[in-house]
Length: 112
Length: 116
Picture 1 (cartoon, chains in turn purple, yellow):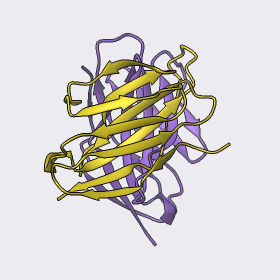
Picture 2 (picture 1 turned 30 degrees about the horizontal axis):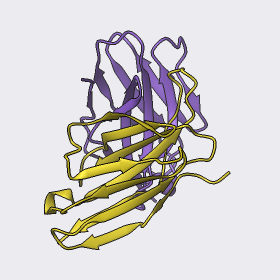
Picture 3 (picture 1 turned 45 degrees about the vertical axis):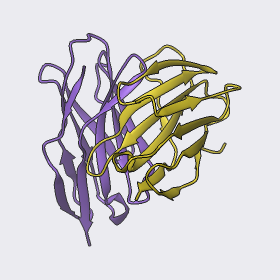
């Protein structure tokens, strides 16, 4: 079974600054996918960004970028130019075969 | 294109009662998943369907839980004889399977169950 570790339970960031959310994973599968989801207080899980284990370049999607270090089994999410609407819970997940395995999440609070 | 919808959004029930939740996936998606999320944790996989076939069930899914997807479209999740430990957010997701690892699962808003 895969294990996902998010060591930061909560983080504060000033509006317009960048924030990095840590994620490490443990898998023996040579081929896997890494995902980040955002969960606002309303509860819906919103897909943010994807990284494949064989992708040579780090994924980017607007203000989101993924710092993928395969040898370290690390897939950190960087949110640039934080906005008040970024305040939410963020989950890292891996996909092996059909199902997602999630970490415990990191709460991000953006301060004005 | 509408997203994944779930009904009801909130359910409060008494211990021992049966409850049923519904999920409507994105229309062209052939896979449908159910997850459960307890407070302060990430979602945990419960089961999934490819079209109308239920292909995998987690050990978390006790015999009080049953899920169906009768025509390969919407799905229902029923919990019989609810217990207080069943209180959680039940999330549904769907995806269009192409065989690539990039098959992204899109989630609905969830059904929050409270068992008194």
